[in-house]
Amino acid sequence: MMNQIDQKSVTAIVNDQVKKSYLKEYEEWLKSVHERLATFQGFLGLEVSLPKFPLDKEYLDYHIIFRFDQFDNLLKWEQSDFLKDRLELVSEFIHSKTNVQYLQGMELWYNMSKEKAKNQRPLFWKQVLVTIFTVYPLILGADLFLNLFFPMHLLKPQIAIFFTVLIVATLMVYPVMPFVTKHIGSWLHKK
Image (cartoon, rainbow, N blue to C red; front, top):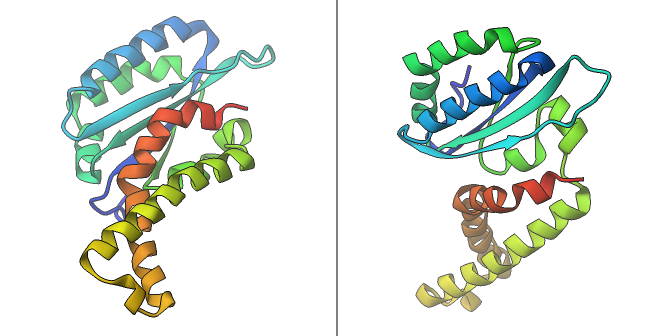
């Protein structure tokens, strides 16, 4: 399943197609899962994308995004007796098999399930704007930090840029992107 994921923070995107006749029960179920999840080791956060109400469907799409500090803790959650019991309970509320996608770092921004991409893919200009306002301060900070310890102007520009990019890319994957998506994710994915 996830054998290629290392010990970096990991995000799971769950897509549940909930039968309209069970919306109240599903939301109560989701609340109980979230309350328990909040106490689980390594849990970093949860976002629920509430569905729109299409008249022509017998179910509604819920997108649940949750983050863990590392894959091992996510795996412990997925294998917990509590979650197994809860999944059995929710099975009658769900229209079709639950779809789960696992992502790390900046993948969350640009790669989503096909259903979510169709409905909530971030607009191009929002991605550009957020990237500029995230990367630019990191570049300035990385240059300042590197110059404190080593005179970067003595290096060839290509090598100096490499060290700056190394720091910026590392920080973008974690902790900057998880922090940014947590705080502006709803705006980013809103049409």
